Length: 337
Ligand code: CUA
Image 1 (cartoon, rainbow, N blue to C red):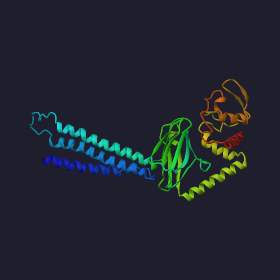
Image 2 (image 1 turned 45 degrees about the vertical axis):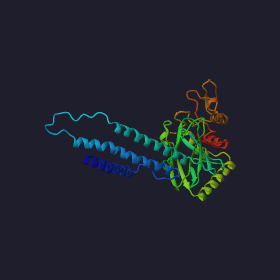
Image 3 (image 1 turned 120 degrees about the horizontal axis):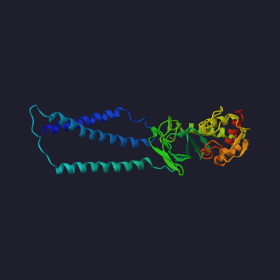
Image 4 (image 1 turned 90 degrees about the vertical axis):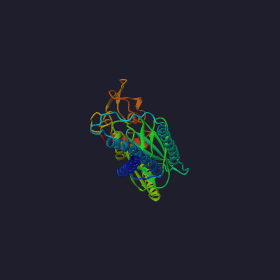
């Protein structure tokens, strides 16, 4: 009986120490969304149970090794024990109850995390190899940075133009895949002003590790100011006509991974000296590259594939490039002599 008390005490002690140790590791980044609270609460509870189960297994094991080790001169077999119905029922029913409790808590938690606010602002997210594009349909703007007003729920509607990507800001906790051919959703209510990083958490190709985007959570007033600034910039761009500098920005964002501007061969042909150059297509057609050819190549990549290269996997419309953007890109190509 004394042994049972010693073991029980040690189990509780080790459980508490393991739990405190796990907490001290700082496994989670700071909480920056309302959805993070129920998730962290449940994880904390799970860590408590995990710490207890760990102690429940390790403590009796180590205690037995020490207390019941063979003494010098002891040569006989140990006491033979076969079956213990009460113990077996206990270790079946108790874990079953724990699992059922967690199933209930998990479902309840999921309900809280997904609670929808009908006022939620919508942001359309497009993931592509390899980057992110955000559209704010309510304001008619788009951005490579994810600006969000604090303490307001945002409904993200997400699409992928190519393979599966995954939308994840660790400080917000929730995570959602982007699946080609359908629209997936996630709701997030940022609760803390600050800068975070959106990262793709689904292996999606060679540049997967760099598929990040800045996330900026600001006050409503700052958000409105940012929207006004973006709207003004878009209006100014539309008014000024094609611009090579803006074209270069787009090149760096969308095209650089495959097309060089120094003449070297990439996944696709180099852009250096492209205008006016002779082009040979896979079907043997030969002609001189002009603006119309370049625009058609971007908009309908499959319609004219250059010999020696794979068809381009890029959907300009899906990543939010407008005709004005494409005109900027052509303007930039003109400068690459
Ligand atoms: Cu997109 Cu990994």
